[in-house]
Length: 322
Ligand code: PBG
Ligand code: ZN
Image (tube, rainbow, N blue to C red; front, top):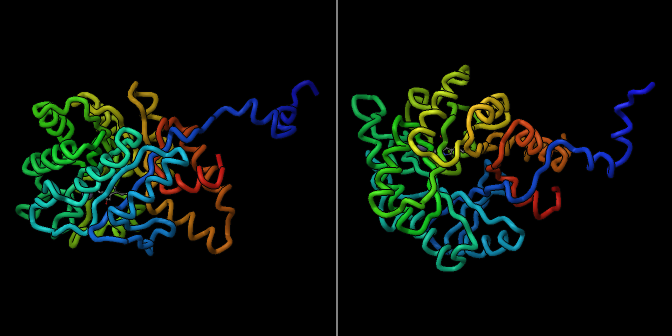
């Protein structure tokens, strides 16, 4: 037999030599949930190994992950006062703005901070935009989102990441940032964001479940591919710097399709439900956690993701899984 593919699988050295997909810790973005108060590091029940941090504790945590070589974080604010229009989202003293200022005061440009831009954790009804006539209103919401992004930029955020799925929000945010002198603040768009049951644990973590109805009138229908590429193209035209696909695991085909249709960096978000399923299966002794996590990470990279947002990031670098 001339052809024996197994020759290239003989031992780890040769397998590593010919490995077609490579991962490194530069590719990871690590999400954090920040709450008010002091001395809070409280594990989120639905997401084992993920915590609510008060700012003082977040500073300690970030000092540790910086030492591990993780230096890109995605921040979510939790527990802010809620209102019909979610205006606390753009309060100068919002928990996210305070956290950004504290992190930058301590770590300056050692840390790259991305903030999530959406209203669902700030509205009484839990939807990602303002509701009028029983409908999540697009255009009224845009300005509030842009103000939220500006507040974060003013606090020192390096990049903002709108996750709301309102039409036109990328250009609205880009314009307001530029008008105020923040033309170097980056924008990673949750471009292709499906209405997904995989966000369940996150909504507990962020206390952001819709009180009524679902998000299907703004998040995407998971039966679509053309719709995904259309959304991505619009965001690219509106000035997004990075395009994201979310969720990741059930959407590897979409990551691949996007990679083949853009020259922008492609990110994927390995979301809360994907994370919690793996964690709980590992806890139950059903699977090998390291094996499964790394298989998933390589799948994202193989599909075409340049950037992976994952709650597993700390385990991966700290436990030497790379
Ligand atoms: C807010 C937002 C959500 C996630 C990121 N930003 C939840 C949602 O849209 O319902 C999900 C993240 C995750 O599940 O890990 N719009
Ligand atoms: Zn939202």
